[in-house]
Image (cartoon, rainbow, N blue to C red):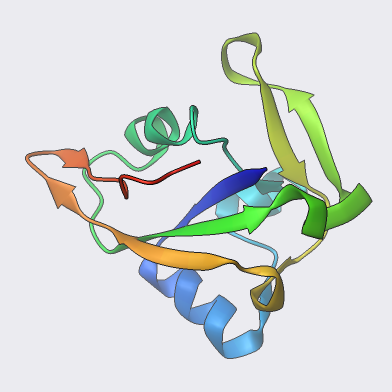
Length: 112
């Protein structure tokens, strides 16, 4: 199963330069990397990244992340994937820009 992480341009640059990251400020504060499923990621973008440009969408396979990935109840009582380990560039399946058009982030059409 694929899960998704949204990063701002400086966070993406850090991941590329260092090969891993502990994530965005909210990830550091909470002690884990916040991910979303395909059905959750648009709402995550709207709630936490409203109006932001320069975002990058990252796709990871849950099987690759192993036992450090936990499913925990969050927004609206839904289970969200949380990674209790650094986010590694070597585990990344693909990345894509997340453009903002008319105030809404446009996701790749083939999210699965």
